[in-house]
Image (cartoon, rainbow, N blue to C red; front, side):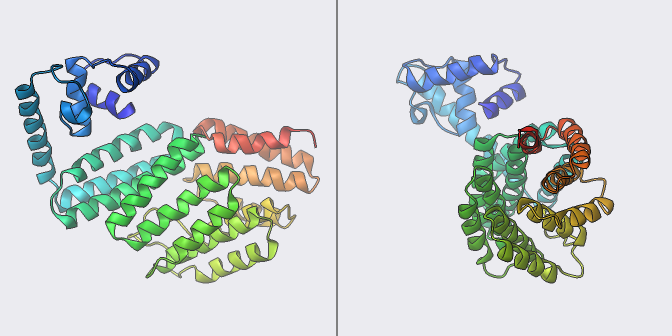
Length: 355
């Protein structure tokens, strides 16, 4: 429905409220109600189908007009996609990264609709791009952007939307024929599983991602740290510690890889990650790692800072340092409100429950 509303806006067509639009779609799908001509035109363009293919009954529109309009629409889409070349692909890729930087600073709630619209545009171009090499490049952009959108949806507690984005990232990563992009999509999807209490399934998915051949060292490092976190979720202290040790060992000397802008890893990131894992395990040692990571924290990563304060609140609470725990919980709550992080707010509510 959101894609339909955006398309209508592009055409200058007014649509009703979200609730009314939902009822309209329900009637179109479940009742013998034929959309008005203006809505049928939007639906044909959105799905790239004729009235017959969309299931509208014969006589609801003139067949010759419908066929002519379908030809015009497909020709227009093919013409747009003929403009796909190296510079345009680079521009679309840069737009994904621009939205990633915005997400880091102002949070998912302010960026999720923008990234969704960006994904819709790239998918429309991809659907009517003829040459395989250009389709693969566009698929890589879709995979990267969808993994980002999935994480944003997860942070805003939209778990179903997150899963849909991660699933798209996974299929697009496969079509892109890029092992790093594909493995990253699997790794990101594992967090949707972990967030609904299926850490064992999340670990299995990460294990599958780690089996992807020819992974770059930085991706191997990231997957290893993610596996260690899932071991922590499962309460396996030894496996978690070994995993974080291995991740630190695998971290390349130059961890800034321009071919993987979706990965930001440094020794500080791994300190924060280890501290998070130890906090999940209830280890007092987590406080030292998290404090060090907070001292060295890059201010551009606002959501990461929110998570750091949340982890410190949990670690200090477990250590009996209730005053300091409340201090970090308050800082985390302020940041979570600022960036719209429902994920961190939900983690903070656990601390407010009677022990």
